[in-house]
Amino acid sequence: MPQKTIAFTAASHLKSMAFVLVLLTVSTASWAEKRTFEMTIEDTKIMLVDKQAFHTFAFNGQVPAPLIHVKEGDEVTVNVNNLTTLPHTIHWHGLLQRGTWQQDGVPDVTQVAIKPGDSFTYKFVAEPSGTMWYHCHVNVNEHVSMRGMWGPFIVVPKNPKPIEKKVTKDFIMMLSGWDTKWASKPGEGGVPGDVFNYFTINGKAFPDTQPLRVSRGDVIRIRLIGAGELTHAIHIHGHVFKVAFKDGHALPYPYDADTIMVGPGERYDLILTMDNPGRWAIHDHVDVHTVNGTKPMGGVMTVIEYNEINHNDPLYAWKGKQFVPDFYYEESLKKPYGMHDAAVFKGQAIQ
Image (cartoon, rainbow, N blue to C red):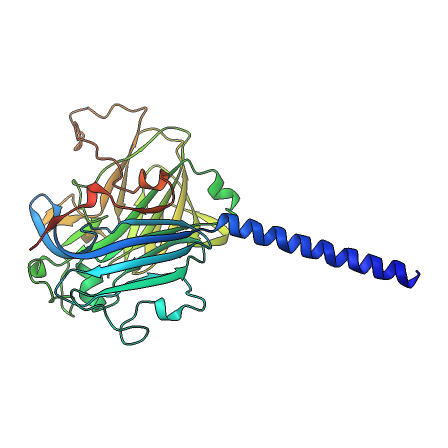
């Protein structure tokens, strides 16, 4: 081939490569966005169930904390104002902090803890995608284990897997335990010998949890997050689910199960096809986690309710129950990307 032809072919190839790189850059830029959020940490009283109160250090005055729902590659800024009387940080659990390790939120390792009355700004890129979460990293034995300092951080992938494209409804469940002898003693607790006697989904124990309302044909995603110190064995009646994601990462071979162990810090995404109309329990198969103090039929329990079924029969514990939406962030997850407070989780400010 003549030299001019070779040079022309090489030049054309380089131009094509450059054009592809430009397209990729434009595509990435159009996908990722910059997002800025304001967050407070407040002394807040919540009710676990009935009249059982607990003093928490709550992000934006709610337990669990607001949902942060962004896209893979988004540039995230979070301005945090500590309104409590104790120091805190935020660790962005599961986010890799590439080139931003100082934003990892560990006191005396990446930053000085945020003192009472002070503020701190976190800046990082949201990656990788998946079910992540955030929590305090000061005295995690107390602040995370039993003061409610945790919330979901969902990063939507640029290229979702085929299995998640089928999902029609999305639910988040954060699992935790509480030792009520420390309920009104902030700054204490979370020590060896503690005995947890209340157990919750999203800060509430049955029967103060809410049902998951579905219709036949729905494909639902349940994002389980081990927010506390305990290991839970979550069992779903009447269905076989696909365990599709672990700690935010897609499993190469999703597998079938009806019970899944969720340890502290772990996340599992379950995909279920709603093909068996009825009322079906979801509960912790660590049986002592289904009590409220010394009373049975409480704790980590809820119910899948099919819309096709009558739920007013007298035997049903939730007959006539007033449904409160967004208990599993299912409504917040439908909103535009951002940070979403949820009225259902708001507690009472402690002055």
